[in-house]
Image 1 (cartoon, rainbow over the protein chains, first blue to last red):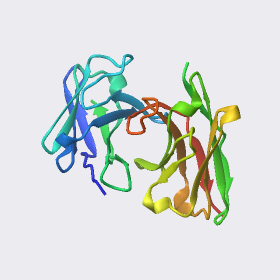
Image 2 (spheres, chains in turn red, brown):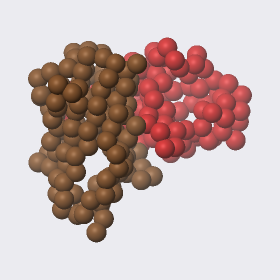
Image 3 (cartoon, chains in turn green, red):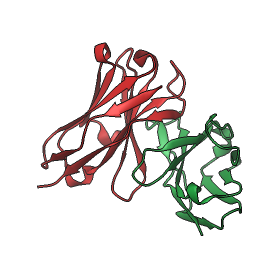
Length: 109
Length: 122
């Protein structure tokens, strides 16, 4: 089945820009979705279809996808952005349609 | 507002079965696929399967086939996930999640239940 690879951790100072990557074979041909999960809470969709933000999500969150890497970018990082982030794709070719990346812990220094 | 409310935490013995419910409100239950995702302690999200509440059609991840059942009761807008032959590795928080688009399964999960902790231990 399709494999998505994320770095285990990313650290960034407040006010800086965080980039969280999600690698997969020709992932640029897929629609990538991103979730934020804070401790003890359910995940929240923050970007879908590579770069679309749900209405409740701040403009600081953006996404891109090309080649073998999708990227979630968080601008002007705040302490409240500290969370685990997961990428997700629909693997139409496999019998395991939904695939999640392993997750990235974002630490705000 | 759109909401999914799950049943409470459970403790199970190895070999037993578990059933988690997921009650929907704020939208037409039959029109949106429900997926189930679990998260073992300290680990990432693991997709388990999906159900179309309109048709009852289901699809499961390979590792759960034979042990996993998904059903629904449309009269009370509730989906159920049942996992049997439990083992310690099934200890996890189980989430139900609704897809974003009606009648289209391959859309992201825009609404999640609060999660149900199931602990499997003797």
